[in-house]
Image 1 (cartoon, rainbow, N blue to C red):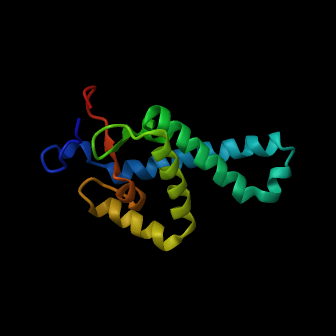
Image 2: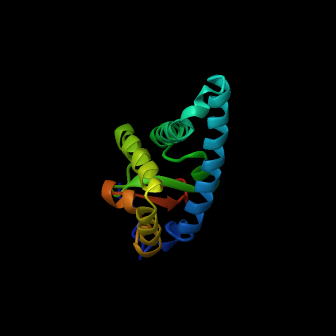
Length: 145
């Protein structure tokens, strides 16, 4: 199994940057809701370390969703799927590393800018963490992919 070629099958990569942004917004909402639940469950003690709680929930949410479904809820709603450059869904450890790198990149603004530019310019629409882990997001076009 291999990924569709961006030049021969551009429909798999069309609108991926926009869809990734929309998926990120949806996932941000999910992560904020889960963080609020975490605050209540810790009787608001979690408020003392809110950035760490948010980061841990974000990493856990992305890792679980990517490892089990190959997409987060936001990706599912925007018809995106996460795949390795081999075309296969990456393993759970890669999902964890991807999620941790995603969180790390968001904490360093210049890295986030580099990642966004890469998503716009690379043929497979890969961000910085995608490039390092040899993964990408592509549009779900048909049941065979």
